[in-house]
Image 1 (cartoon, rainbow, N blue to C red):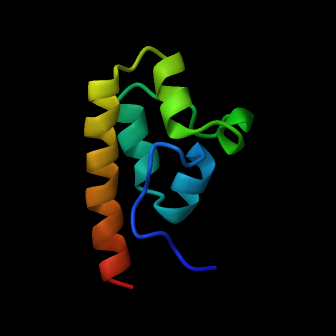
Image 2: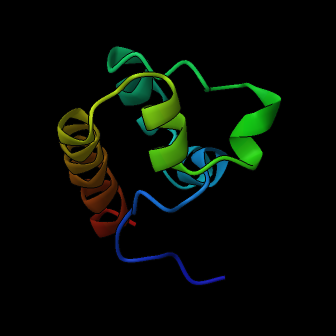
Length: 77
């Protein structure tokens, strides 16, 4: 399976963590405690963030931070 070029808000939380394990800590830092929750395999990053009171602006910042780490990870592979 080919890895995506970037992480998007529409991706499932667990898929993001599988692609970039460092994303879990970033999500926790933003107050998204879905890491390890059974619903993480079914819920998108956007849905999880908004349902936990994270604003769209903070979601965008979190996604940017996750992608920065993810880009570094895939460039080193």
